[in-house]
Length: 255
Ligand SMILES: NC(=O)c1ccc[n+]([C@@H]2O[C@H](COP(=O)([O-])OP(=O)(O)OC[C@H]3O[C@@H](n4cnc5c(N)ncnc54)[C@H](O)[C@@H]3O)[C@@H](O)[C@H]2O)c1
Image (cartoon, rainbow, N blue to C red; front, side, top):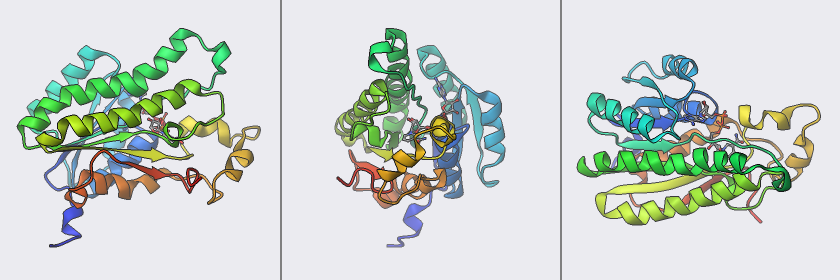
């Protein structure tokens, strides 16, 4: 057994939703460094194209524009990817949003928008990728949850917390349904990471010091700190791991 070899992703095709920037960009970079061809599906086409240029020169990468809350756009994008790459062997369901609104002031539209992107789109993309993975020998699905799906974060984000709880249970459900098709489904639950989504926390009047008091490592995470785990979960190195959630949060959820 060559252990280092088992982490390599050469010849694999990885679809990353929301890979244009933030955590998705870093996840895309990690997968391409391990040898995968990366396909980024994002609403922000310009940024996605720019990110593709920054990935490892060895792979055949692609940026596709789609709003993954729209079923037709999802099915069209998957069709294009399958025509070009034949087998989607890795799916990283990463795109997500976080709106901080007190529950009493939240409109139904805002509540639904969070669920549309964080949960419903994850269901849609997984559903449309599944037949291709099944018919081509299987694959690995990695859902980006959050520590907010494991413990309640108090920053006026009930919809986000509830949506990430749903991501955790969707991960376990799909792992169980698709285990017989050689498809593994796992989740990564990041803590506070420095991206556009958490920008308000890093601004002068944001709750950064209060937040850091709750993180045993006393710092926020950097996007590249998810890279090793996504390679692990995408590769043969995790061949006996399915239905699990790996926390990457500086110890926030220890207690
Ligand atoms: N940043 C954090 O601290 C943190 C912590 C835990 C979990 N997460 C999760 O990580 C994931 C990425 O977060 P981020 O901080 O990188 O966010 P981000 O806002 O920096 O990037 C999100 C990306 O998703 C894309 N996107 C948004 N809606 C889309 C849609 N409908 N269709 C297609 N693409 C869409 C955006 O264009 C963008 O490129 C999210 O699921 C988020 O909940 C983030």
